[in-house]
Amino acid sequence: MNKFLKVLLKALPLAGPMIVFIFTKNEYLIALSIILFITIILKVKYYKNEWIILLVGIVCGIIGEVGGDLIYKMQSWESGSFFGVPIWLPLFWGYIFLLTRRVGNLIVKNKEN
Image (cartoon, rainbow, N blue to C red; front, side):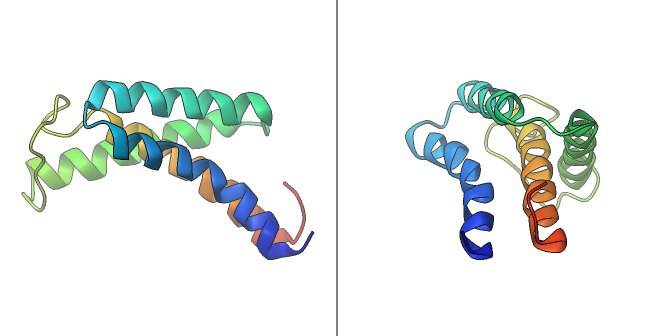
């Protein structure tokens, strides 16, 4: 399988939450679906200490989104139950950190993780 297809397959789990976004605007349902997707990708294949990457992503998401909203007023959300930010957004950051690490390792190392 060529490198492009491998990268595409590693990034494919990103489609899951995007499909959920199309069908619902309920932030709790979206948060639960992201937790489900995180659980699935970690159960299918877990690499050592990936939970740390997930937590760093969630913390960065909280700092970035809440900080941007509360301190700088750079963005605002219609509904947000977590200091004005949708509860799913920091979870999505963690999910993206996981996927970015997996895709990045494939690109940089030119092999499976």
